[in-house]
Image (cartoon, helix red, strand yellow):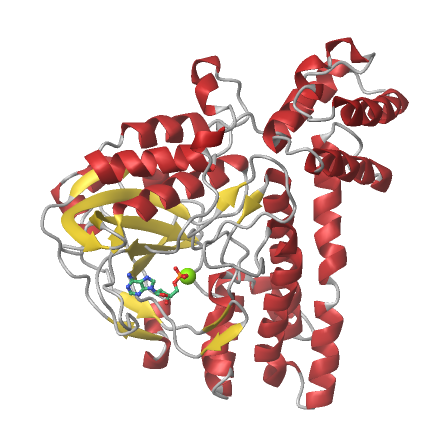
Length: 494
Ligand code: AMP
Ligand code: MG
């Protein structure tokens, strides 16, 4: 075992063969490191210099895995845009092993774009460099916002080409997750009535992620409740920063409540509840404001999977599942509303404050107003009076809308009596100055695809790693897109 390389301990690979398919990565021609997450490497107990060296690069490119790696493609199914698909699975990814990190948390290490697997169907098992750049930027930005997410350990250009809408350079992302078990993993077994495997999987998830469920009267009901709670918190986190996942299929819904599988995602520039980014989401199923309802729907699918475990009586199982499931909307609100109140600098525990924040969002929606700039700008305003409101009110196409809202807001600010400095500092901690705007992600992707130029990606990554800090030298990355820069759809074609 290499002293500075990864120390793998692979619990998922120890599950029976039905759970995965063993598969080595397919080597690539000429791997080149384009991004390395040194901090994350250290968390995992891997020497970053080892990763950047010959053996590390061999691992990150899939050319030669270190001792202890046991590459597997995980099996899963899923509902895609509401339609049942019995067999999906890792078609272009491999779980190469698990590492228990410095905090004692077991983390999955996955290569995405590492070649065909038993689940590839007609796909090539590869990824273009574009989606690798996008996922690296997005997942690390989400982490910087404090939102649960998979992480990016490294990105590699393969020196090979992939066929997409055009020929593009290939890439591999090394992704780290607390879990790659999805609602779709449960569906994979449950829908073919493989109750034993469902139970094994549930026990695995409890053991690894929710150990306190073991002591509950009904461990599986307790598992459901905890998964539901994590999803509720996650969706609330997304909505607060204007994130749209884009493909909330059950196979992209993690049982540990991490943001997973960044495809055609986007962040709102102008606030519009009905925004959809995915080019294939014609019906708006996964629009910004549909996400809580869709998460609820996905969790209902998970509940169905666990019915055989909840109680010997089917009737009783359904009753238990329903009881747990129906807590979702209230749980979601219990995370979303305090978060909203905090965004406008008011007491998170007062429901009227959340209502006030929702009114501000309505005002934004009526006039194509940049969400990030409004909240950030609001955090600079004094409580006393509107003299300095200019920069914020001018963001609204009808500034009167802001003026009347701000008058109500100031009454609440005064009533709560928190000093300006304290309130403003708290607001700047929850309202990012920078987000991963779609046009900026696109510019980074275009530079990577057209010229193998990773400088725009690196600059953006650096700024987004401190999203709550004012960074005057990066003012160009804070502004909304000009009309000619706007990116309205993103594609799955990875
Ligand atoms: P996604 O929509 O990205 O979550 O992927 C849905 C399914 O398609 C998963 O089973 C993927 O593994 C599979 N898939 C996507 N792209 C490819 C590819 N290039 N080669 C093989 N399988 C793929
Ligand atoms: Mg997926």
